[in-house]
Length: 258
Image 1 (cartoon, rainbow, N blue to C red):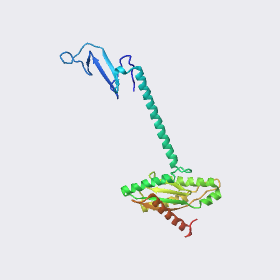
Image 2: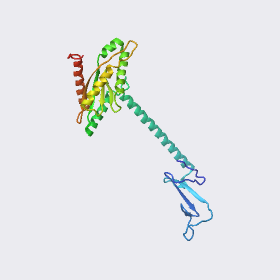
Image 3: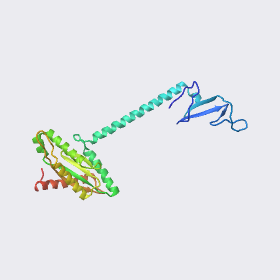
């Protein structure tokens, strides 16, 4: 908002809270000049006195001190707006950090469960099922023992990248803890979910991690559960986890997984 000096007439159009009034020969008007007979017509040029009024402040009170105070308040408002924008940006950054796994660039368990709850609500509202995939990497302890924990971390990163690259942007990949991952396959029924889970399993088995010590081959056990209206996130995770456990037991020839 530009405020003119009170030492002379200020010219301004109507903008925001600033109104313009004019007087010609003592008669106020905004278009044309009315003569004695009340009929508009040309007249000789006369001095026009324009004044500027801000909100409810009369023109005669727009002293230099008042103008300075208004400009100061406007500057403070602008500073507060910038500080608010900065605070909101920092809050978003902190939320991103809180939702991201400490090791891998994917959502952590807390963020994953929140997304699972959102997808369950979506399924309840629209009647569209989605499938939860619970993944457990096989023999991670042996990988850490043989290649070292740094290689083990790289193996986890490698698996996370394969999962993200081979799922849709509408799907959600997260780390549930340790060597366990979760994948939410959006709008995927039982058959589609099972087919996609098998496809991801093959991709990981066929994509070893290259290291200086040689390629590290990985495999996974998985379980799926297609959730629908009325399910709870913890219940869905528990059912998918149990399905994964049975799959891991079958891979070990019926022996209890360790």
